[in-house]
Amino acid sequence: MIEHDYPDALTHHYKPTASGQAIPLYVGGLRFSDDEEGHDWHGRAEMAWYPSPRVMVEASRPNRGIEDFVGLRASGKREWVEMPSIKLPGEEVPLPPQPDSLSEDSRPSGVSRNDRLTPQTLGSGTALSRVTFLIPNGWDVPNGSGVCDPEDLVRTWNGRLEAFPSGWRITIDRRPEVNKQFLRRLRDENTSAVTHIGQIARADGSLFDVADIQLLLQALRLAFSLAVGRTINLLLPVGWWGDQAVWTRWVSPHIDGVLNTGTFLDRHKGNEQMRELIERVVDYCRTPERLEVIQYATSYYVTATYDVDVELGVALPISGLQLLAYNRFVEERGTHTQRQWENLKPTEAQIRLLLDDCRMRTSVPASYPHLAEVSRRAQMSEGTRTARDALGCVMLLRNKIIHPTSTKPGAWTAYQWAEGKDYAAHCLLLAILNTVGYRGQHRSAWADDIWEGVTDPVPWATATEGPEF
Image (cartoon, rainbow, N blue to C red; front, side):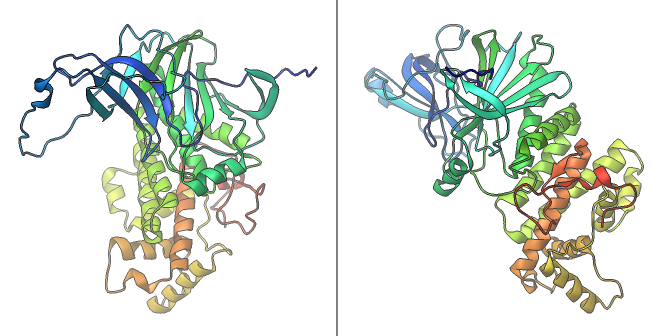
């Protein structure tokens, strides 16, 4: 006998499949929104992974004869093509069960269609007790609290993360097979898979509507993407009333494949980091205006860290820092008017104001010898007594991309561009963390020791006066 008091791991209406394998959503009768004659079709819907997650439907109906082969002549004009939606039989409450297999589909021969569906909602999104969702290509943090397999109570693992932003309880369970080797295989094979299942519920257990969590769902997406430095989206959210699945949204969001990007999350301390990050981002993004600021800043950060040339990787974080600086000093604090801000030239002055306010270091890190060489060369060519610091070097490199002159970007080595990009991207990450109020640990891109388990507090959590040097 094995005794434990672990809770059941989260389950979802749409069970995850093996890596790269489509997730079946529905098999049966349906109608297409763009079928003006209202034909009855029989087919299947699935969420395919490639080239990015998308809900696809394959259906057919009996051939009616010659009229099915007579179509309208194309207009020859350039027009937008609207993707169809489908209507399922019945009221869709509770939701149709997930089919066991897509291969067990007997479709009539005749006219066939294979379409990508537009985002669509099934069921009722009111009076929900909880919402569950799938997380693809997530993170490997093995030190969560214990859970057990509800279908095999002997099988247990440490995979649960819980966060409590104001008024809500968010639970994230890692799937038992997900570890460092699993994610490495996804990376090496360039494939995708569900790695976590999440759940949102009221902290007091009361019911809520889908409209109540729209900002929260988007904020979670941003928190996850910040943590790993690549785009993560929530797949196939399902709303529950008790044990009945009564609402879902089929949508085709963008996700990034697994790459070693980002510097924030530490494998050994990641559970506590993720908990605070979720709480801070969700609480900050309670208005559409604030959510929009963090959304665009995160987009700049993820684009710079994931898959872009190092030259653009220097320029993109600067735009994100400009956005955050304007939001802080003009929109939120009101220390500068619009005119005063526009007169604060050059752009470096605006960003330096933000970095100083976040108590961030602007000196060239000792671990960045190639960026130090940029500073030395710039001082020689400019004939100044004072050498450029790290921010000054990044702005010099950035201006070669944004405002090209006779000195071309090729004058600098790939190593110099890479260290400039790393410094700028980490500044943007820290500025986002500061904006949402995060005060915990992070993996510093500027540290000499980069081993797992080595983290630092964010600069503003320990500094008492002046920026950190």
